[in-house]
Length: 191
Image (cartoon, rainbow, N blue to C red; front, side):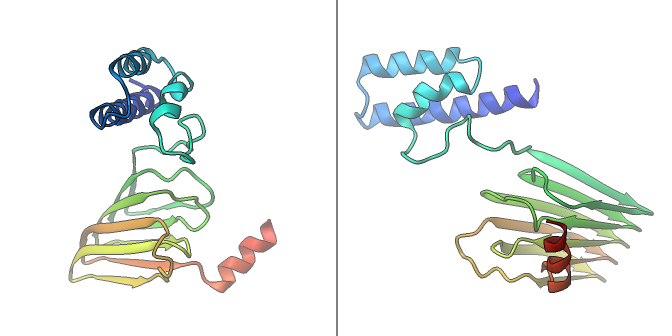
């Protein structure tokens, strides 16, 4: 099954759950529930789910057709070398990082994050540097063994996107920070 079909299935299931809740609460009669359920089950695209969505989704919520694409997961490896991810990119819900005698630079500062992002890191004689957006909240739950974790992020906005970082630092380390002035100046000059 392709990612687009997976996204369609995931959203279809969310809408069916909402339909069931609305029906259970008495907000939909039986005929309306059955009609909308049949529409959801027979939809072959996210656009075909819009009529169902308009009936049950909260007002002001972005429609399935308007939601930005967000992959489920991605994996970055650095074994006796380096790996980096910078710029504007679709940040997945889960990122797995393996740095073994190498380093990974993960820059999320220019990305539009929504909801939660989970970063699972394994650093063995290696390191991970994560640059987060200014408004991001960061939760760190790492186990350093002869290694370290340093969280220098601002995290001032309690309504901003949440980034959860967990993992094992064995003779390795992780640094989490926001973009510094020099990097911000350089970025602004490019724009």
